[in-house]
Image (cartoon, rainbow, N blue to C red; front, side, top):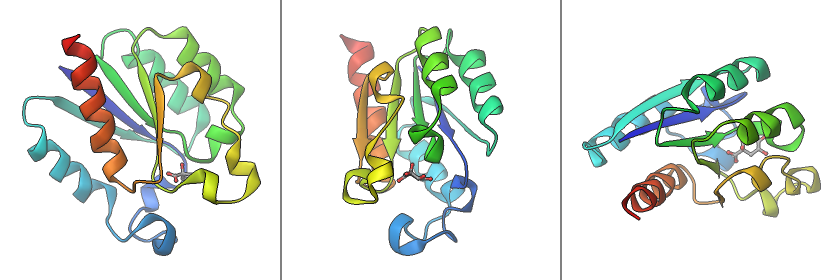
Length: 142
Ligand code: DQA
């Protein structure tokens, strides 16, 4: 089973960026722990700060992966183009946010992508990515 994680803008700075909100662990380190927790899954990780590159990645994997876990960062709140890309592909997409976006500024309460995703996980820290994998494994079985 193939699952692609896609992280959007500023998420390359996890570990350094606003640690009170996003924690102190770099994503690469967390990704290694995810791979050992789910050895049966072919897990891939992609990050870009560029909207079009995120869309290209969705197109590239969105007809062959079994699941996509997308943290679109701030593009979540602005991007009609990412909404359209998720609508265009056939692989189910789980929207993940590390922080609880509903406990933060009002502009983060709007997501342009949730409606096209299988579901939304927000506020459980990095563990949200593991929860999304759990969902995708379960979904594949049914
Ligand atoms: C985020 C929440 C977004 O509002 C923010 O712009 C991010 C990270 C999260 O993971 O909590 O960059 O997606």
